[in-house]
Image (tube, rainbow, N blue to C red; front, side):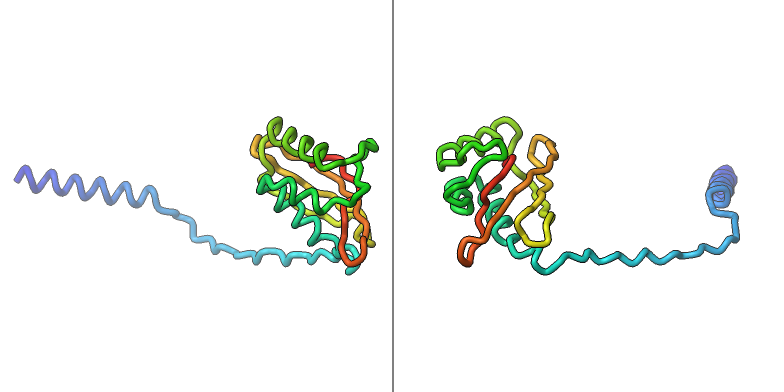
Length: 151
């Protein structure tokens, strides 16, 4: 008998708990479809140098600075006018890595309709998030970086 009363009380308590936790409203849920994304429109000429920039940053992410240097023109300079020799470039890249961590992500944004200006959003392993600016020129059939402000 005692077991019967305890089981009954347990079942009654469980039923009350479930009823109190259930949603008592009879409102209908209106489902709103997600907004349609707006496509980004970029002029065709604005993206011609992007493969060069992407390859350059793949080499930077892989710490292959000698390969990254091959994407620079022979007369490449920093935005302050310093000539970028191979040694100066490698020192700049390794210094940026040691101070701020490795490059973890790069987003490329064409900044001019003729592919000569590119703005990059760069993330580093130290949680640093910044913009870099590249100026490019077409050298024969290839695009080359002629100026950069940061790696």
